[in-house]
Image (cartoon, rainbow, N blue to C red):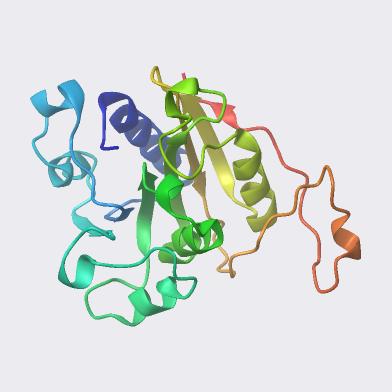
Length: 216
């Protein structure tokens, strides 16, 4: 999918907002899927590394199923986060983890969201750019399209904070969310409209989902 000007502006705004609001700094990024600069953003940056450097993120890494060497990873593996953290080529976790047009191509969504969560450090940020379900433009694009509900569920189950979202002119849902300061394992969300989580053995429930803040 790549980084367009709208996606770049969203990343810049949410990272800056998190810094101002909570004093969280961002120095490293892990991309799920190797991205490139798209559209008129090429007037400002020729590589994604240059873009991230413009917002003071100087350590760049990516994983992709269409790559070579240490970058080549199968994102359908549910233990991928542990393999990455044991590898000498990757940090234990990153300040920012992005999913910019990769997640909809990953069949195992549990593996996707678990990897994103576990590779993001406590108080770090996760940013998604995904095809919006109600946008006809993306109906045949990949395995999945998304509504806000899945992200509301992820936020509630994992106690994510500072959640912001917008929709691009070409029908992409952009969502940013941050992990709380306390480290915790990834939790699978339940749809509270249909599941009484207190009756699920071994599950201690989740908070009611809170609305996401629109970024204008």
